[in-house]
Image 1 (tube, helix red, strand yellow):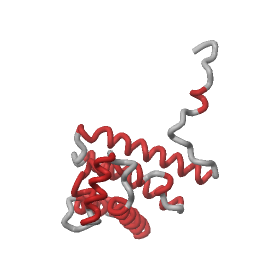
Image 2 (cartoon, rainbow, N blue to C red):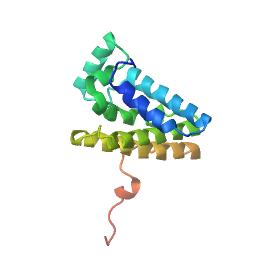
Image 3 (cartoon, helix red, strand yellow):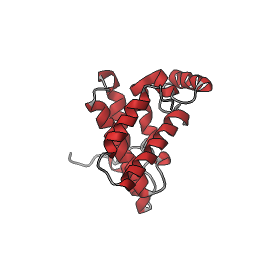
Length: 168
């Protein structure tokens, strides 16, 4: 991400505040999450998280300037729409401690953005989806650590597919 992009100070200030008074190891973990977040925002495919038109626009912008394209086009709203991809099972680090840290930091980032009034009413749905994705990420991580397969979130749970009993 380019230093002149608007997202740089917003994210960096968050990570600076987050690291205040923490142990050196914790600060290094925060720094790794920050680097993964920047890499995700600047490089990863966002087609799943953006509308088709927005994804096409982002891909075109990235042809000219890779760093900060998402911020330039969509700002905080774009970040909120794409964060579920950053906390998805496939995006989490293989280390359980790093994965937990990534989920925790993204949760704190969302709360920070809301507290600092960077999230307005028009971004409410994206904010809620990002918070739900963190919950799913935590459940998937615990299932991965238990050796269970991840829950397919697009399916209805088996207990809800049962025929209704004689009494509700």
